[in-house]
Image (cartoon, rainbow, N blue to C red; front, side, top):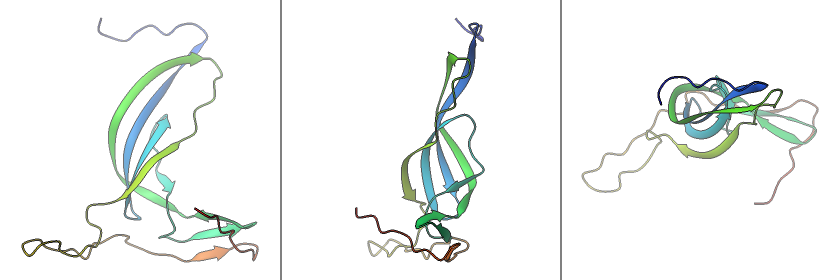
Length: 132
């Protein structure tokens, strides 16, 4: 059957997507989102960040390119809150700096990130170190 299915009563439609987001910090973040893709994402420490109450929060990286990997629509009971955005993975973009692996291979100096930053403590606290 083709076409749009009728929406059952007392439900709302949720758009469940998985995106590859190319960020200006130099990473590609794979995220699962309930809704549309974000304009910026707090990704890493490359652009700097802030510390308040001993908690480090990285500055947001802007989304430069979006690749939709999967998209599903699901009817849920009315009033159901949106799912939180989940980070599924993070990897360097293909133009990250690297040495040539072979004699015929060309290395690259990379171009990301376009800007770098420092960490600022709002209240003078120091970020807590979390062991891996």
